[in-house]
Image (cartoon, rainbow, N blue to C red; front, side):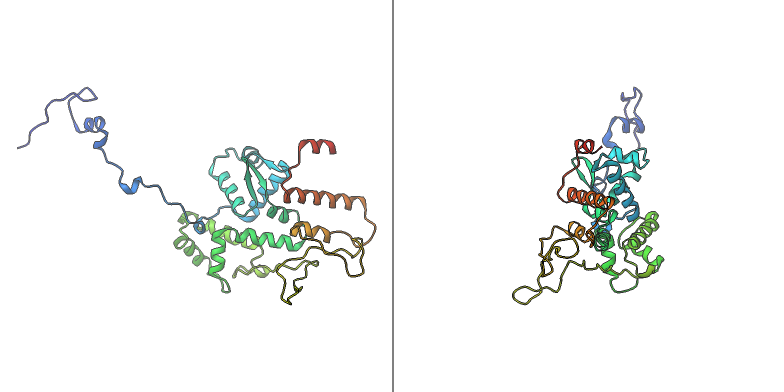
Length: 300
């Protein structure tokens, strides 16, 4: 035989009923399970997909450099790119993509362009630009993983690639088409498609600068692993009957500047000014010397 609950004053001031019990006793409702209480696991690096491609990320990096000088705040960059909210998903995803490609970095809360982006946007030698584009693409773990998976073979057709992204890399179904487009467009921009055919990922050939001598050997007759720096002795770069003296390397970007010196003795004012400006910009990036406002005012 069923018995009624005794009259009891509840938080609502009325007699007990089921709704009142739930209100007065928070433990009486459904409790989160152990599985629900666990934090969601983070995606593995190779499963983190991008929604902005390499070209869009280069536009962002160029904006940082040309409008911000050397650095800019997130709010400044958002305004320059016409984003209304720097905490919105679109802006955050775009900055994330630029960082994934290695084109910008955060220093003391501000964004700064990287040497990789400098070598792409402000070409000194074709070799350095090609190398930087290759490194930007391969710097994205998912892209590198796909390249290694299909190295030497043709890529699946679009349907197959979409299935791969969804099942193996766990891209959400509503983002698969975007992830596929970003992958293919970025590979094309980085030079991984031979003659524009999007059927196989082929690593671009990095040409050897004219000042490099990879066939040089050490005293033991073995090929030397050290890359020599530029040599002087040609054109207006110095003298020497033996072809010039060898200087230590300071990186591909700075070494490449010597290749831009003219062979003839004469040099016009505009050419000299452009070379000096480019050389200064690369020195500041290479040795992390930001341009101060005082320097800017002294040149006006």
